[in-house]
Length: 385
Ligand code: CAA
Image: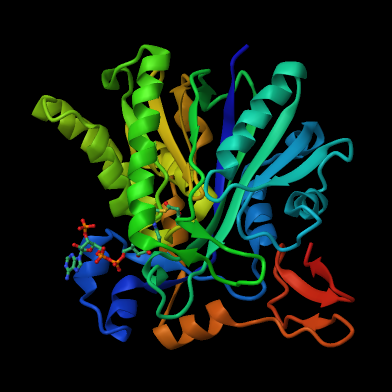
């Protein structure tokens, strides 16, 4: 049975900060961010947005009424959860009015969560072949004003509908994974921002890639030429480029290398404008490659997932005939229609805390748009439907 991605959607906040403005405000050479990290913009959320609102919007972009009736499992990966107990997937289940006879869960392992969610989806469909599974990766990457990772912040959500006989790509059964217990990036429950060993985290990303890649090739008896393109977890585009260079053999023919680099550029196009979206960033890279590239049916794409802490996984998918038909061609308009903030506005909006009174109430004073946070009442989050 062929199981894979039938549709893929994305949502981001409609406000952004130009990374050069941030550099100037912090007294840093803008080239460090634009050339050193390959970042150009970052998406900025307001207090009426969270992983639920972003996730609901990403899913709404792709789901029909019929899909909503057929979905019997929602798995949401995140590392910016809004509740220690209730899964964000349950809120989204309610907002989207999904079939009640569905499982809804949230899973976590830093930026790796959504990759595990894909595997859960496939296993579910193996036992229930007519199931539709909604996989959502939703995160807000917030390091704090002046923090080392500030220039790599971002926010967004990717939603994927997983089913048999998919119209976009088939998930191959070749996953190779690795765990290394390390403290490169982590966020204890009492801290709003992560603690990051920046340099160590980049080394661990590359180290896990090297180990997982070698084993992946060996376990599956594959070589790099079996894949037309690669997607990487993108904490910032330069990190992914370093990863890519690590696996490209020095002896590779220049023309062949150029093809790979060309596809790689397509895969980082959206992330350059969005920033890090943690567990969704690998799949934002995939969406960017598919919507902006020229791959053909039958091409294999290899994906590297990395979650600090650390868990990594390499797996692949094969594109299906006419896959372009289920993709948007006009997404660039969404980027162009965003509002550009200045640094003062970004600092106020992105870091504004919701003030909750003694009874657990907060008025969000939002714009009332569909799928935004409306209020908190007796500690309960209430969303605009
Ligand atoms: N012009 C051009 N390039 C410049 C420059 C200038 N004026 N100044 C510096 N650069 C270059 C540097 O040479 C460097 O490039 P190389 O890495 O290719 O050598 C690059 O800009 C970054 O410079 P630094 O290493 O000096 O930057 P930094 O000390 O500020 O740290 C960082 C960078 C560690 C990534 C930091 O932004 C950070 O901590 N980020 C958050 C953690 C992170 O993203 N880690 C990635 C792996 S972990 C992961 O993947 C999980 C996740 O999503 C968080």
